[in-house]
Length: 327
Image 1: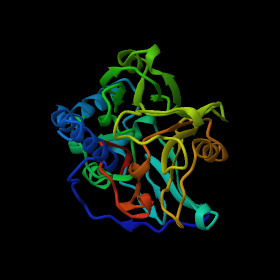
Image 2 (image 1 turned 90 degrees about the horizontal axis):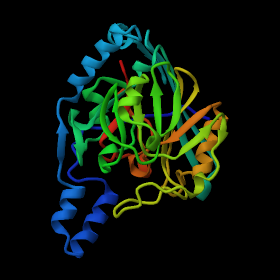
Image 3 (image 1 turned 180 degrees about the vertical axis):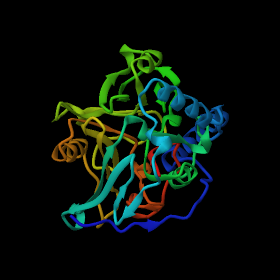
Image 4 (image 1 turned 45 degrees about the vertical axis):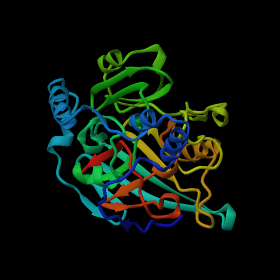
């Protein structure tokens, strides 16, 4: 295990959607579905703009209910090497590696000890909820003064799933196993098809993510995760095999852990299978863990710098959302 050496990432605006989607668009164009492909994969569809104004209202409501106002009142904190400390959070980022050559693997772990669940926030590309709305994670993080961030579930690629962000329900189309962050700081796997967005908000859910699968439950690897597929429609890669991955887990309420494993880079990092990824969380003591969007989207940022090396190219890919902690 060695400390990471972050590389600065210049702010950029993506010209096109993710690489995998462009392949899907090309296929659709060849088949004569030009308008459909552009509408589905490229053209922005904004449904809610200025989303952060809704979140400000929700935070005030939560404060009135006595849950937490830490995110609004704490000091800006200090950074010492790869550790950030404030009244809100203590975050430590570490680089891990094993193997060499074709078996080389590099992954990054962020240990998050939070004052409350509301310290873990999400942000949307261009502060807008919708489909095909993209920004580089570093640009989203900068716009939200994030000290630390990872990519989210890329909600904007699909039209299904329950989407609750910072206490606001944006979508209620349960379709798969999701992950919910509750107001008590606990992460719980949930069956989206057995509940509703309104019910989850009423139950005190602060965030949800809809990708998957769940990796760890009750401290053990979930059976069958090496056979699960998500979004196998045109333009999307299989989530199986050795891949770059991003995941979020819980050691105890308000003590979370995030892991980003690099991959698809010969001689640098091969990526991990779903079971290998789950084992990383088990080794960290996680009781619950969940797989988020991966591949070229897998990104971790700390103190305005790119921590990992996406696809071995040190280049981010546009996405629709991040998970972050503000300074």
